[in-house]
Length: 374
Image 1 (tube, one colour):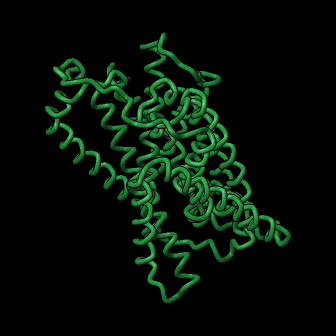
Image 2 (spheres, helix red, strand yellow; image 1 turned 30 degrees about the vertical axis):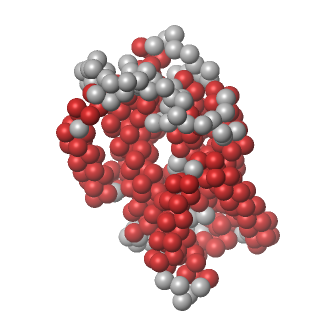
Image 3 (tube, helix red, strand yellow; image 1 turned 45 degrees about the horizontal axis):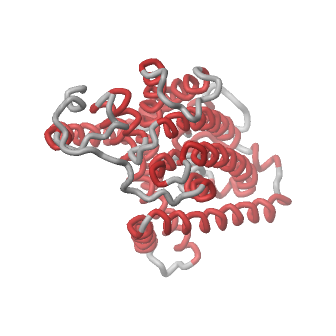
């Protein structure tokens, strides 16, 4: 693992290639905007296995994971402000192989999340315009996503901020309009994995719902990839992360409670749809990346105690330890309940690792990057 760090690199990375154009407000927009679609769809699949009450418990558990994770992850983001995000942290802590695993897991997360969102957009548009083929609409949305990222981060951030504000406004309007019709009987009916009363069997549904509760918050860590384009990243990123996770927790609580009015129509017991499986694949990537990131935090605290840390994880080591252990539990339960998807995910990582080994020489002669070296 260390041989690549000690090899003969050609040139040196300066980290001045990207313009620092993003302020705190734009970073908050990215943090929430990357996740806001999860407040509209995806999470509702969790009701199919956990029921409304069971899913509330699962969602609270996941919210606790993300809160402790973000406070811990922010230390890494500000200490190593690299556009590679989790890849850079793991590469610095564990060498090339650690960097590969974190980078590949992040790639799976962010490659599979946009198609899931696009499929949901296509389904929504098909409801409003029945003549419109949902898959065609999904492809159109996907192409728009790609085009916005290609044109540049500043335009993307401005667009995402506007869409995020509109999305939050729509959620608040939805909550305000339908809340007078809230009935506790609707919320509790079949609330424990289809049963009206809690039993030990309810845990089975609650664990199976974990990937869909994660969808409420998945991708907020994407702000780390904008670290090199952020103004005063040591200050703006912590503010954006903390404000972002608080925004999402509040919205998640409101959405779960108010949407229960329509629980009879939303809960469908049975097998997962294509969108649900894509969501699960994306979550697999996220969870593996979270685990490696928290391990990197512990490794760097021990191996490099004098590293500059503009933001230090509060309640260390409790916060990162809770995030790490809880993420491992999530991964284990996801493998158990989604074994086929887990196998596909493992195949992706294995094939990627073969390519990683075959291209070793390219990395050995690439420009040296001080932020990635051990």
